[in-house]
Image (cartoon, rainbow, N blue to C red; front, side, top):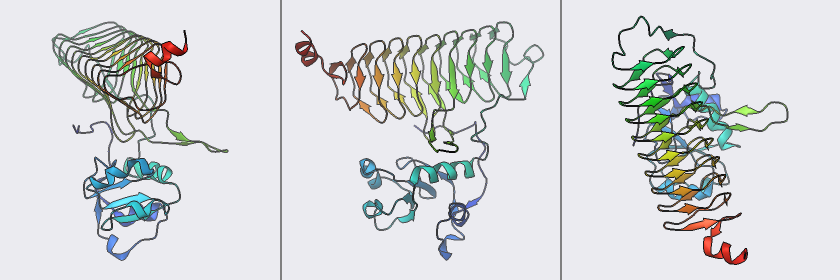
Length: 328
């Protein structure tokens, strides 16, 4: 599902030749009048978006992408469909970071906001209860019968549904929250992800223009950290419960009815199916797919995809029967 991004301002009118000039890519005369709408992932891009292809493991997405303009390397260019325009660069991800900042000039700014409303003087939250020292940004929407605890900060444009409980000392930014959601004390939701390119002189930051989307009937435990997405969104599905001190990195997708216990960590861009249970202190590596009805034992290290209806444990995580036999 696509969500309208209400948190970042995008350049209103951008031509392809401007983007290519910005990246020092050779232009064609025909590009001068080609309008580009956005930068998107392969599976989300429309025909007037720029997209990118940086690894052969995503080659199946080349068959479904609607984009006509694909950033890639000379080594991977032979995998692209013939009718697509190949925009050749040395480093795809650095180029994508530059283009994202070009489209969204404020995307690297994660400072606190200067504009907040005075909730004591605004009569727009009649059915919401607030603790002491609550700070709300502009255009925040909070549904009826919700509560916000002491010292919490909810930044501009955040959406919170009905019957929600926001604890004390909570920070929420760049986030959409459904109905009947509990965010317990000390949680930080919607901060930028840990995305950058190491460099000897100065690390290059990757813009994060995605958001966090939390479904209905979700519980987020104390001191959880949920990073917003880079280009796509970080998503927590309906009826999923997260214990205390869980970390969810950028672009992670957690399905419905999942149980995540304490101190579990998810690296970026992994997808977790429905009805998944993960024991305490387990770690999930990045860009993995965990199937439906999977159970991961506590302390496990998941470093490869796990199919549906599987129980795993250990490091590296393996079928639990094999793990038990090896550790008798």
